[in-house]
Length: 79
Image (cartoon, rainbow, N blue to C red; front, side, top):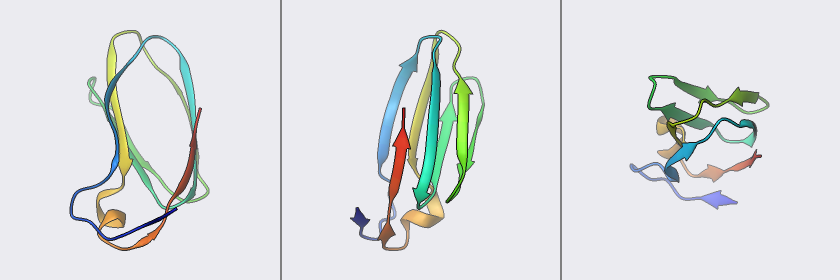
């Protein structure tokens, strides 16, 4: 999907994780993520992240801040 340039990154707001594992694949664009325990980072094009989430952790994912300032195609898989 093509996203227009934006100063405000789009994404998935804060949500709980309850002791499960997730896999994120960034096909096009960059995914930034943070959690309530201080963890976070950027998943770049071609990267895969496998995460084991602790019970009670709050998490959010969104377009990487600098990437969102440019128009571009964004494709990712979050399982």
